[in-house]
Length: 164
Image 1 (cartoon, rainbow, N blue to C red):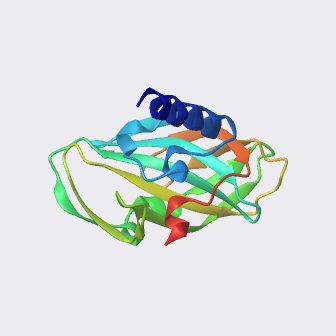
Image 2: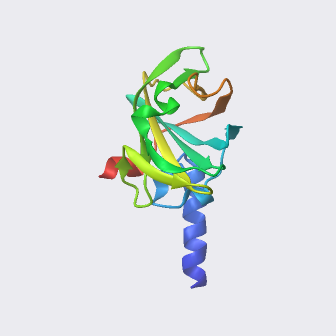
């Protein structure tokens, strides 16, 4: 049992060093995510877990937490998340080309039902990836004036949702 625990720990350390987000290393709970930055607005918290350069796109994973007493169905395309854009370390804007929620089985879905205390993965893909992009600032103009900041890592495993 100890050998298994050490092996899993070493894999997670290695995965974080080479730029794999928690969501991308396997199907894990958003409760275990390490966040680069986060903000809270109107009873919700959004945190950036990781951004990875996938060659053609930059894929970012977020954890969204419901902090208020809501209980409802959320449709991705009807949320303010759809209007986000990534601004890189060269001040170049990258539009979001795809986004979705990711369930506990690492499957993408367009809608989720959430209540107070629930957390869910959000994955967004942005166009125009280049190897020299090292930082990301993600802006969500439709939901809040704050931004999320973090590094952009090169390479990585395919996101869990792309394994459908």
